[in-house]
Figure 1 (cartoon, one colour):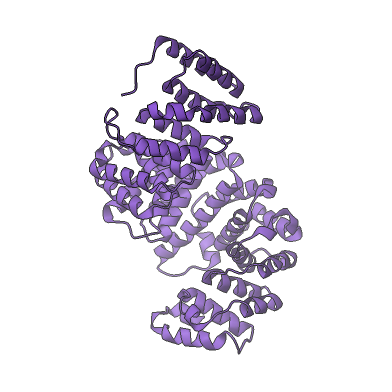
Figure 2 (tube, helix red, strand yellow; figure 1 turned 120 degrees about the vertical axis):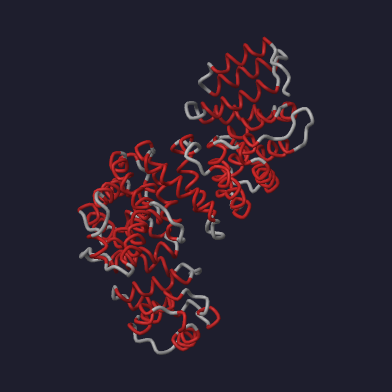
Amino acid sequence: MTAPIKPEHKRLTSRLHGCHRASDIAGLMRTARDSNRLDGVLWAAAVQRMSAVEKRGNTEAVRQGWELLMAMSETHLVTLGHRELAVIAVAIAKSKHAKGKERFLEEVLQMALIPKSEHGLLSIRHLANLSWAAASTKLSAPKLFEAAAGAVGNSPGLCNSRDVSQLLWAFGRASHSQLGLDVLENLAKEHVSSQFLPSFGDHDMAASVWAIAVLASQRSLEEKSRRFIWELAAHATARSSEFSPQGLSMLLWGTATLLSRGVDMPSAALTTACGPQIVALASKFTPQGAANILWSLSTMAKIDHEKAAGEMLSFEELSARMLPGQHAVMEALLDRILKKIFECNGQDIANSLWAVANTSHLGPSAVMLFDQITQNPDVVPVHLFSAQECANSLWALARSRWKGDPHLLVLRIASRMEALNEWDEQSLSTAVWALAVLGHRHAALPLLANSRLELHHLRTFPATSMCMLAWTCGMLNIQGYPVPGLVVALQSRVQDLSISQLAV
């Protein structure tokens, strides 16, 4: 147990809560130190307060305040219990101006993991806070995550909704996927109940869905985990009006990603329920948030409709069968992208264009977006595009119903592609296909020539990418490299190809 707080220390702590500037906190801590009234609890409270007020103060004063507090850590860190260590960890993780916070947080985590008989074992609550802090600061902290996974495995019923969301988010963010899936399975066995789900806040629901989508990329989910995520998403549907822009983005991205990986999700009900809230909050979305939802809506619409129809739908059929209100949602989000165009990165642009083309949506905002970036490519950072962003943007230009001239933007993207050396199979096949369709043979041929597509490499291509590449070579009338190797690779996998792939 942490030592009882002395009356004079209690008074200083009360004064600390009245400090609204970093300089005030630093001054109070110097006074406490010089008068021998500074203890670990007061120091921990000052760290928490500094993190809370740093946005309001002068940046230099904030940095100086953090330097003062960190200089005191050697004396006071060893005196703290688990609660104070967890509080400090979260405060440091949230700080934007604490220089050297990664090293400092590592010291906090190491101290928390040292067995102390007077403090007992770390509780799941404290482990969740510490794990969240480590993941937020991009620390791997394997011993911490192993301890958290072990604690959940021993007592999953002790977790409340905030513990669940913090733990799942932390394991997903820190890329401890295998341990994270074990944690999910233990939690799912205990917490699939109508009594537990209402205790989730909107952010807890969104963070959990996002995290499970990230974790599910590593291995297939067990049945109880699938039931848990379905029930959680269904519960979120009934509370869609509670979500913030960030929460909506995380919730829908996670749902779309899980659906694309074969996990059954109440996607149609969720997108319909969230539509009015998205439109109402459209002016508050970041470009990334708006673009992620555009990608999510188009992904879910295509999967749901193809599943319902039992066949591939044309773009026109897909657009005609979009859920009620979804066109209005897409227009509101595209309008937000337009207003924040200079803040968009390559992924924001590529996701937005891809969503428009994928659904065959062509409202006024969609047309304006295509017009603006094709007529003036300088408004977007093409020079920073990744291979995937180049490929998806070109695909969108080739497949959308937009009737303008993409020539300037295609040239700019082609120039960027010349500087890229690393291409994955899907991006490469998509990019050369789109360049061929758009009539830019002169850009497609060098990209193929420089791609080093040996037979062993071609055999790793997904079937769809391989067929797309074969179609492109035929369209470009290529008879030499890489056609011979491509033919051999296709022949070795012909039994695995679908009718639509063979038709290509």
